[in-house]
Length: 465
Ligand SMILES: *Cc1c(COP(=O)(O)O)cnc(C)c1O
Image (cartoon, rainbow, N blue to C red):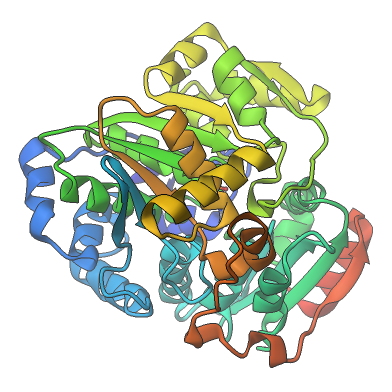
Protein backbone atom coordinates (compact mmCIF):
# COMPACT_ATOMS: atom_id res chain seq x y z
CA UNK A 1 0.00 0.00 0.00
CA UNK A 2 1.23 3.48 -0.89
CA UNK A 3 0.55 6.53 1.28
CA UNK A 4 0.04 10.08 0.06
CA UNK A 5 -0.10 13.36 1.95
CA UNK A 6 -3.39 15.23 2.28
CA UNK A 7 -1.53 18.30 1.00
CA UNK A 8 -0.26 16.54 -2.08
CA UNK A 9 3.40 17.48 -2.21
CA UNK A 10 5.22 15.26 0.32
CA UNK A 11 6.93 12.10 -0.94
CA UNK A 12 4.73 9.06 -1.45
CA UNK A 13 5.69 6.44 1.17
CA UNK A 14 5.01 2.81 1.96
CA UNK A 15 3.41 1.72 5.25
CA UNK A 16 6.73 1.60 7.07
CA UNK A 17 7.66 5.07 5.88
CA UNK A 18 4.28 6.56 6.75
CA UNK A 19 4.39 4.98 10.22
CA UNK A 20 7.83 6.33 11.04
CA UNK A 21 7.19 9.77 9.54
CA UNK A 22 4.04 10.66 11.46
CA UNK A 23 3.34 14.09 9.97
CA UNK A 24 4.11 14.54 6.25
CA UNK A 25 6.89 16.93 5.17
CA UNK A 26 4.39 19.31 3.49
CA UNK A 27 2.49 19.72 6.78
CA UNK A 28 -0.21 17.28 5.70
CA UNK A 29 -1.20 13.86 7.00
CA UNK A 30 -0.60 10.53 5.34
CA UNK A 31 -3.56 8.58 3.97
CA UNK A 32 -3.65 5.39 1.91
CA UNK A 33 -3.63 6.08 -1.81
CA UNK A 34 -6.97 4.24 -2.09
CA UNK A 35 -9.31 2.60 0.44
CA UNK A 36 -9.07 -1.17 0.42
CA UNK A 37 -12.40 -2.96 0.66
CA UNK A 38 -13.72 -6.14 2.17
CA UNK A 39 -16.55 -7.95 0.41
CA UNK A 40 -19.80 -8.73 2.19
CA UNK A 41 -18.67 -12.36 2.48
CA UNK A 42 -15.32 -11.36 3.93
CA UNK A 43 -17.05 -9.18 6.51
CA UNK A 44 -19.53 -11.94 7.39
CA UNK A 45 -16.60 -14.31 7.86
CA UNK A 46 -15.19 -12.07 10.62
CA UNK A 47 -18.07 -12.96 12.94
CA UNK A 48 -16.44 -16.05 14.39
CA UNK A 49 -12.93 -14.66 14.72
CA UNK A 50 -11.17 -13.44 17.84
CA UNK A 51 -9.78 -9.93 18.11
CA UNK A 52 -6.27 -10.71 16.87
CA UNK A 53 -7.52 -12.58 13.82
CA UNK A 54 -10.02 -9.81 13.05
CA UNK A 55 -7.17 -7.32 13.33
CA UNK A 56 -5.06 -9.28 10.85
CA UNK A 57 -7.89 -9.47 8.28
CA UNK A 58 -8.76 -5.78 8.58
CA UNK A 59 -5.21 -4.39 8.63
CA UNK A 60 -3.47 -6.72 6.15
CA UNK A 61 -4.20 -4.56 3.08
CA UNK A 62 -2.83 -1.44 4.81
CA UNK A 63 0.52 -3.00 5.72
CA UNK A 64 1.00 -4.91 2.47
CA UNK A 65 4.54 -4.51 1.18
CA UNK A 66 5.95 -3.73 4.62
CA UNK A 67 4.82 -6.69 6.77
CA UNK A 68 3.66 -10.18 5.92
CA UNK A 69 0.40 -11.45 7.35
CA UNK A 70 2.34 -13.68 9.73
CA UNK A 71 4.47 -10.78 10.95
CA UNK A 72 1.34 -8.71 11.47
CA UNK A 73 -0.28 -11.57 13.41
CA UNK A 74 2.79 -11.90 15.62
CA UNK A 75 2.75 -8.19 16.47
CA UNK A 76 -1.02 -8.18 17.12
CA UNK A 77 -0.73 -11.21 19.37
CA UNK A 78 1.93 -9.46 21.45
CA UNK A 79 0.10 -6.11 21.53
CA UNK A 80 -3.33 -7.46 22.45
CA UNK A 81 -1.94 -10.07 24.82
CA UNK A 82 -1.28 -7.20 27.22
CA UNK A 83 -4.99 -6.43 27.57
CA UNK A 84 -6.74 -7.40 30.78
CA UNK A 85 -9.90 -8.65 29.02
CA UNK A 86 -9.72 -11.74 26.81
CA UNK A 87 -12.11 -10.19 24.28
CA UNK A 88 -9.72 -7.16 24.12
CA UNK A 89 -12.65 -4.79 23.33
CA UNK A 90 -15.80 -6.34 24.85
CA UNK A 91 -19.36 -5.17 24.17
CA UNK A 92 -21.65 -4.40 27.11
CA UNK A 93 -25.39 -3.82 26.82
CA UNK A 94 -26.84 -0.62 28.28
CA UNK A 95 -30.38 -0.63 26.99
CA UNK A 96 -32.59 -2.48 24.51
CA UNK A 97 -30.60 -1.21 21.55
CA UNK A 98 -27.76 0.75 23.12
CA UNK A 99 -24.33 -0.82 23.59
CA UNK A 100 -20.96 0.12 24.96
CA UNK A 101 -17.73 -0.97 23.32
CA UNK A 102 -15.19 -1.04 26.14
CA UNK A 103 -11.87 0.08 24.73
CA UNK A 104 -10.12 0.66 28.05
CA UNK A 105 -8.75 -2.74 29.04
CA UNK A 106 -5.17 -1.93 28.02
CA UNK A 107 -2.26 -0.99 30.30
CA UNK A 108 -3.14 2.71 30.71
CA UNK A 109 -6.94 2.37 30.88
CA UNK A 110 -7.83 4.40 27.78
CA UNK A 111 -8.70 3.43 24.22
CA UNK A 112 -5.43 4.82 22.94
CA UNK A 113 -3.70 1.65 24.14
CA UNK A 114 -5.50 -0.30 21.42
CA UNK A 115 -3.53 1.54 18.79
CA UNK A 116 -0.36 2.47 20.62
CA UNK A 117 0.51 -0.96 21.95
CA UNK A 118 0.68 -2.04 18.32
CA UNK A 119 2.44 1.12 17.15
CA UNK A 120 5.19 0.67 19.79
CA UNK A 121 5.89 -2.77 18.38
CA UNK A 122 5.76 -1.50 14.80
CA UNK A 123 8.37 1.14 15.64
CA UNK A 124 10.62 -1.43 17.23
CA UNK A 125 10.24 -3.73 14.23
CA UNK A 126 10.94 -1.02 11.67
CA UNK A 127 13.85 0.45 13.62
CA UNK A 128 15.57 -2.86 14.24
CA UNK A 129 19.10 -2.51 12.98
CA UNK A 130 18.79 1.24 12.35
CA UNK A 131 21.89 3.14 13.40
CA UNK A 132 20.17 6.48 13.99
CA UNK A 133 17.78 6.75 16.89
CA UNK A 134 14.31 8.16 16.35
CA UNK A 135 12.97 11.01 18.46
CA UNK A 136 9.27 10.69 19.05
CA UNK A 137 7.62 13.93 20.08
CA UNK A 138 3.99 14.38 20.93
CA UNK A 139 1.48 16.59 22.66
CA UNK A 140 -1.16 15.06 24.85
CA UNK A 141 -4.37 16.18 26.49
CA UNK A 142 -3.84 13.24 28.83
CA UNK A 143 -4.42 9.79 27.46
CA UNK A 144 -2.22 9.74 24.36
CA UNK A 145 0.81 10.55 26.44
CA UNK A 146 0.47 7.73 28.90
CA UNK A 147 -0.42 5.22 26.22
CA UNK A 148 2.52 6.27 24.03
CA UNK A 149 4.95 6.26 26.93
CA UNK A 150 3.81 2.80 28.03
CA UNK A 151 4.21 1.55 24.47
CA UNK A 152 7.70 3.03 23.94
CA UNK A 153 9.35 2.96 27.39
CA UNK A 154 12.64 1.10 27.26
CA UNK A 155 12.39 0.40 23.54
CA UNK A 156 15.79 0.56 21.89
CA UNK A 157 16.44 3.21 19.25
CA UNK A 158 13.70 5.60 20.37
CA UNK A 159 13.59 8.63 22.66
CA UNK A 160 10.16 9.98 23.54
CA UNK A 161 9.39 13.59 24.53
CA UNK A 162 5.79 14.11 25.61
CA UNK A 163 4.31 17.58 26.14
CA UNK A 164 1.25 17.92 28.34
CA UNK A 165 -0.58 21.09 29.42
CA UNK A 166 0.64 21.83 32.96
CA UNK A 167 -2.10 21.36 35.54
CA UNK A 168 -4.73 20.45 32.93
CA UNK A 169 -4.57 16.68 32.97
CA UNK A 170 -5.98 14.53 35.76
CA UNK A 171 -3.68 13.25 38.55
CA UNK A 172 -4.07 9.72 37.26
CA UNK A 173 -3.25 10.78 33.71
CA UNK A 174 -0.18 12.76 34.82
CA UNK A 175 1.11 10.01 37.06
CA UNK A 176 0.68 7.42 34.34
CA UNK A 177 3.18 9.43 32.32
CA UNK A 178 5.52 10.86 34.93
CA UNK A 179 6.05 7.68 36.95
CA UNK A 180 7.59 5.89 33.98
CA UNK A 181 11.27 6.39 34.78
CA UNK A 182 12.82 4.67 31.76
CA UNK A 183 15.77 6.75 30.54
CA UNK A 184 14.30 7.20 27.04
CA UNK A 185 11.13 8.85 28.43
CA UNK A 186 11.01 12.66 28.87
CA UNK A 187 7.90 14.39 30.23
CA UNK A 188 7.44 18.13 29.66
CA UNK A 189 4.66 20.09 31.34
CA UNK A 190 3.96 23.12 29.13
CA UNK A 191 2.69 26.35 30.65
CA UNK A 192 -0.26 26.55 28.25
CA UNK A 193 -3.22 24.54 26.98
CA UNK A 194 -3.27 21.45 24.79
CA UNK A 195 -3.58 23.35 21.52
CA UNK A 196 -0.49 25.40 22.43
CA UNK A 197 1.44 22.20 23.11
CA UNK A 198 0.20 20.69 19.85
CA UNK A 199 1.20 23.83 17.93
CA UNK A 200 4.74 23.57 19.38
CA UNK A 201 4.99 19.99 18.18
CA UNK A 202 3.79 20.94 14.72
CA UNK A 203 6.29 23.80 14.59
CA UNK A 204 9.14 21.42 15.42
CA UNK A 205 8.13 19.18 12.54
CA UNK A 206 7.96 22.14 10.20
CA UNK A 207 11.49 23.21 11.18
CA UNK A 208 13.17 20.88 8.75
CA UNK A 209 16.68 21.38 10.14
CA UNK A 210 15.54 20.40 13.62
CA UNK A 211 13.30 17.68 12.38
CA UNK A 212 16.02 16.05 10.27
CA UNK A 213 18.75 16.44 12.86
CA UNK A 214 16.81 14.57 15.51
CA UNK A 215 14.89 12.30 13.14
CA UNK A 216 11.56 13.38 14.55
CA UNK A 217 8.52 11.19 14.49
CA UNK A 218 5.04 11.43 15.94
CA UNK A 219 2.72 9.08 17.71
CA UNK A 220 -0.18 11.52 18.03
CA UNK A 221 -3.36 10.52 16.31
CA UNK A 222 -1.95 12.12 13.18
CA UNK A 223 0.09 8.91 12.85
CA UNK A 224 -1.61 6.75 10.24
CA UNK A 225 -0.77 3.45 11.93
CA UNK A 226 -2.81 4.48 14.97
CA UNK A 227 -5.88 5.21 12.94
CA UNK A 228 -5.49 1.94 11.12
CA UNK A 229 -5.42 -0.03 14.37
CA UNK A 230 -8.63 1.69 15.47
CA UNK A 231 -10.53 0.60 12.37
CA UNK A 232 -10.42 -2.96 13.68
CA UNK A 233 -12.81 -2.57 16.61
CA UNK A 234 -15.57 -1.11 14.44
CA UNK A 235 -15.56 -4.37 12.48
CA UNK A 236 -15.18 -6.48 15.63
CA UNK A 237 -18.21 -4.87 17.30
CA UNK A 238 -20.41 -4.55 14.23
CA UNK A 239 -20.21 -8.20 13.18
CA UNK A 240 -21.12 -9.24 16.71
CA UNK A 241 -24.31 -7.17 16.48
CA UNK A 242 -25.40 -8.46 13.09
CA UNK A 243 -23.34 -6.74 10.40
CA UNK A 244 -23.15 -7.04 7.47
CA UNK A 245 -26.83 -8.14 7.43
CA UNK A 246 -27.86 -5.12 9.41
CA UNK A 247 -26.18 -1.75 9.63
CA UNK A 248 -24.80 -0.56 12.95
CA UNK A 249 -24.41 2.99 14.29
CA UNK A 250 -21.57 4.30 16.45
CA UNK A 251 -21.33 7.24 18.80
CA UNK A 252 -17.81 8.51 19.38
CA UNK A 253 -16.67 11.01 22.02
CA UNK A 254 -14.38 13.12 19.92
CA UNK A 255 -11.45 15.50 20.23
CA UNK A 256 -8.86 15.18 17.51
CA UNK A 257 -11.28 13.34 15.19
CA UNK A 258 -9.01 10.27 15.13
CA UNK A 259 -11.24 7.63 16.64
CA UNK A 260 -14.30 8.65 14.63
CA UNK A 261 -12.26 8.96 11.43
CA UNK A 262 -11.33 5.30 11.91
CA UNK A 263 -15.07 4.62 11.78
CA UNK A 264 -15.25 6.51 8.49
CA UNK A 265 -12.45 4.30 7.15
CA UNK A 266 -14.38 1.19 8.24
CA UNK A 267 -17.39 2.48 6.30
CA UNK A 268 -15.20 3.18 3.27
CA UNK A 269 -13.94 -0.40 3.47
CA UNK A 270 -17.49 -1.68 3.19
CA UNK A 271 -18.73 -2.03 6.77
CA UNK A 272 -22.41 -1.02 6.75
CA UNK A 273 -22.44 1.87 9.22
CA UNK A 274 -25.80 3.61 9.48
CA UNK A 275 -24.39 6.74 11.09
CA UNK A 276 -21.39 8.00 12.97
CA UNK A 277 -22.29 10.32 15.80
CA UNK A 278 -19.60 12.89 16.53
CA UNK A 279 -20.01 13.77 20.20
CA UNK A 280 -18.14 16.83 21.45
CA UNK A 281 -18.13 18.63 24.78
CA UNK A 282 -18.62 22.41 24.85
CA UNK A 283 -15.41 22.74 22.82
CA UNK A 284 -17.54 22.15 19.78
CA UNK A 285 -15.51 23.07 16.70
CA UNK A 286 -16.37 19.74 15.10
CA UNK A 287 -20.05 20.06 15.82
CA UNK A 288 -20.06 23.54 14.29
CA UNK A 289 -18.08 22.34 11.28
CA UNK A 290 -20.40 19.41 10.62
CA UNK A 291 -23.67 21.20 11.33
CA UNK A 292 -22.99 24.56 9.68
CA UNK A 293 -19.74 24.30 7.75
CA UNK A 294 -18.00 26.69 10.15
CA UNK A 295 -14.60 25.31 11.15
CA UNK A 296 -13.35 28.12 13.35
CA UNK A 297 -11.31 27.80 16.45
CA UNK A 298 -12.07 29.64 19.69
CA UNK A 299 -10.38 29.40 23.06
CA UNK A 300 -10.41 26.11 24.93
CA UNK A 301 -12.83 25.79 27.83
CA UNK A 302 -11.51 23.30 30.41
CA UNK A 303 -14.09 20.58 31.17
CA UNK A 304 -14.40 17.27 33.02
CA UNK A 305 -13.44 15.61 29.72
CA UNK A 306 -9.89 16.92 29.19
CA UNK A 307 -9.11 14.54 26.35
CA UNK A 308 -11.73 16.35 24.29
CA UNK A 309 -10.75 19.91 25.27
CA UNK A 310 -9.49 20.96 21.87
CA UNK A 311 -10.28 23.65 19.37
CA UNK A 312 -8.28 22.25 16.47
CA UNK A 313 -8.97 18.70 15.33
CA UNK A 314 -5.93 17.52 13.42
CA UNK A 315 -7.48 14.51 11.77
CA UNK A 316 -10.39 16.46 10.34
CA UNK A 317 -8.04 17.32 7.49
CA UNK A 318 -8.13 13.67 6.44
CA UNK A 319 -11.90 13.81 6.07
CA UNK A 320 -11.80 17.14 4.24
CA UNK A 321 -9.25 15.67 1.85
CA UNK A 322 -11.30 12.58 1.14
CA UNK A 323 -14.42 14.71 0.57
CA UNK A 324 -12.57 17.07 -1.76
CA UNK A 325 -11.81 14.31 -4.26
CA UNK A 326 -8.40 13.95 -2.63
CA UNK A 327 -7.22 17.19 -4.18
CA UNK A 328 -4.01 17.92 -2.26
CA UNK A 329 -3.61 21.41 -3.75
CA UNK A 330 -7.10 22.43 -2.64
CA UNK A 331 -6.55 21.09 0.89
CA UNK A 332 -3.20 22.79 1.10
CA UNK A 333 -4.88 26.13 0.29
CA UNK A 334 -7.82 25.49 2.61
CA UNK A 335 -5.53 24.60 5.52
CA UNK A 336 -3.21 27.55 4.84
CA UNK A 337 -6.29 29.75 5.15
CA UNK A 338 -7.20 28.12 8.43
CA UNK A 339 -3.67 28.39 9.80
CA UNK A 340 -3.55 32.12 9.14
CA UNK A 341 -7.07 33.12 10.26
CA UNK A 342 -8.03 30.23 12.60
CA UNK A 343 -11.23 29.88 10.60
CA UNK A 344 -12.45 28.36 7.35
CA UNK A 345 -15.63 27.24 5.62
CA UNK A 346 -16.24 23.74 4.40
CA UNK A 347 -17.06 23.57 0.70
CA UNK A 348 -20.55 22.39 -0.28
CA UNK A 349 -19.11 19.09 -1.42
CA UNK A 350 -17.39 18.61 1.94
CA UNK A 351 -20.51 19.51 3.94
CA UNK A 352 -22.79 17.29 1.89
CA UNK A 353 -20.33 14.42 1.83
CA UNK A 354 -19.97 14.53 5.60
CA UNK A 355 -23.72 14.75 6.12
CA UNK A 356 -24.29 11.42 4.44
CA UNK A 357 -22.59 9.59 7.30
CA UNK A 358 -21.97 11.91 10.25
CA UNK A 359 -24.34 13.43 12.79
CA UNK A 360 -23.00 15.68 15.51
CA UNK A 361 -23.94 17.21 18.82
CA UNK A 362 -22.25 19.14 21.63
CA UNK A 363 -22.99 17.91 25.15
CA UNK A 364 -22.47 20.20 28.16
CA UNK A 365 -21.53 19.18 31.72
CA UNK A 366 -25.12 18.65 32.84
CA UNK A 367 -25.91 16.47 29.80
CA UNK A 368 -22.79 14.48 30.57
CA UNK A 369 -23.72 14.02 34.23
CA UNK A 370 -27.28 13.01 33.28
CA UNK A 371 -25.97 10.35 30.90
CA UNK A 372 -23.70 8.97 33.62
CA UNK A 373 -26.62 8.80 36.01
CA UNK A 374 -28.82 7.20 33.33
CA UNK A 375 -26.35 4.41 32.60
CA UNK A 376 -25.81 3.81 36.30
CA UNK A 377 -29.51 3.63 37.16
CA UNK A 378 -30.60 1.82 34.01
CA UNK A 379 -27.81 -0.73 33.62
CA UNK A 380 -25.58 -0.54 36.68
CA UNK A 381 -22.71 0.68 34.51
CA UNK A 382 -20.32 3.40 35.66
CA UNK A 383 -19.16 5.49 32.69
CA UNK A 384 -16.17 7.79 32.56
CA UNK A 385 -17.03 11.40 31.59
CA UNK A 386 -15.81 11.03 27.98
CA UNK A 387 -17.86 7.91 27.45
CA UNK A 388 -20.83 9.67 29.05
CA UNK A 389 -20.62 12.42 26.42
CA UNK A 390 -20.72 9.71 23.78
CA UNK A 391 -23.66 8.00 25.44
CA UNK A 392 -25.64 11.24 25.80
CA UNK A 393 -25.12 11.81 22.08
CA UNK A 394 -26.06 8.20 21.31
CA UNK A 395 -29.38 8.62 23.07
CA UNK A 396 -30.07 11.98 21.42
CA UNK A 397 -29.20 10.90 17.88
CA UNK A 398 -30.19 7.25 17.67
CA UNK A 399 -31.89 6.12 14.46
CA UNK A 400 -33.04 2.64 13.46
CA UNK A 401 -29.77 0.76 13.83
CA UNK A 402 -28.31 -0.61 17.06
CA UNK A 403 -26.13 2.10 18.58
CA UNK A 404 -22.68 1.42 19.97
CA UNK A 405 -21.00 4.07 22.13
CA UNK A 406 -17.23 3.81 22.25
CA UNK A 407 -16.20 3.68 25.92
CA UNK A 408 -12.89 5.47 25.66
CA UNK A 409 -11.61 5.47 29.24
CA UNK A 410 -11.94 3.51 32.46
CA UNK A 411 -14.02 5.49 35.00
CA UNK A 412 -11.25 5.22 37.60
CA UNK A 413 -9.16 7.58 35.47
CA UNK A 414 -11.61 10.41 36.22
CA UNK A 415 -12.72 9.45 39.66
CA UNK A 416 -13.74 12.90 40.96
CA UNK A 417 -16.06 13.68 38.05
CA UNK A 418 -17.59 10.23 38.32
CA UNK A 419 -18.18 10.61 42.03
CA UNK A 420 -19.86 13.99 41.52
CA UNK A 421 -22.29 12.52 38.98
CA UNK A 422 -23.17 9.13 40.44
CA UNK A 423 -21.79 9.09 43.99
CA UNK A 424 -19.47 6.15 43.32
CA UNK A 425 -15.67 6.15 43.47
CA UNK A 426 -14.52 3.51 40.99
CA UNK A 427 -11.32 1.74 42.07
CA UNK A 428 -8.23 1.59 39.89
CA UNK A 429 -7.81 -1.95 38.54
CA UNK A 430 -5.11 -3.93 40.36
CA UNK A 431 -2.69 -3.65 37.43
CA UNK A 432 -2.22 0.07 38.07
CA UNK A 433 -3.06 0.08 41.77
CA UNK A 434 0.17 1.54 43.19
CA UNK A 435 0.23 4.55 40.86
CA UNK A 436 -0.05 7.06 43.68
CA UNK A 437 2.95 5.65 45.53
CA UNK A 438 5.35 5.78 42.59
CA UNK A 439 8.02 8.47 42.08
CA UNK A 440 7.26 11.13 39.44
CA UNK A 441 9.65 12.83 37.04
CA UNK A 442 8.86 15.76 34.73
CA UNK A 443 9.98 19.31 33.92
CA UNK A 444 7.83 22.43 33.57
CA UNK A 445 8.70 24.62 30.56
CA UNK A 446 7.33 27.89 29.17
CA UNK A 447 5.28 27.48 25.99
CA UNK A 448 7.96 28.73 23.64
CA UNK A 449 9.60 27.06 20.69
CA UNK A 450 13.05 28.08 21.95
CA UNK A 451 12.59 26.55 25.40
CA UNK A 452 11.24 23.25 24.15
CA UNK A 453 13.73 22.76 21.33
CA UNK A 454 16.64 23.59 23.64
CA UNK A 455 15.37 21.01 26.12
CA UNK A 456 15.09 18.34 23.46
CA UNK A 457 18.44 19.20 21.88
CA UNK A 458 20.12 18.68 25.25
CA UNK A 459 18.63 15.26 25.76
CA UNK A 460 17.98 13.62 22.39
CA UNK A 461 20.65 11.83 20.43
CA UNK A 462 21.31 13.85 17.28
CA UNK A 463 21.61 12.10 13.97
CA UNK A 464 24.95 10.85 12.78
CA UNK A 465 27.14 11.55 15.73
C1 LIG B 1 -8.23 10.79 23.13
C2 LIG B 1 -9.54 10.58 23.79
C3 LIG B 1 -10.73 10.96 23.17
C4 LIG B 1 -10.76 11.64 21.82
O1 LIG B 1 -10.28 10.83 20.81
P1 LIG B 1 -9.85 11.46 19.41
O2 LIG B 1 -9.32 10.33 18.63
O3 LIG B 1 -8.84 12.50 19.72
O4 LIG B 1 -11.10 12.04 18.83
C5 LIG B 1 -11.90 10.68 23.83
N1 LIG B 1 -11.91 10.09 25.04
C6 LIG B 1 -10.79 9.73 25.67
C7 LIG B 1 -10.87 9.10 27.01
C8 LIG B 1 -9.57 9.94 25.06
O5 LIG B 1 -8.44 9.58 25.69
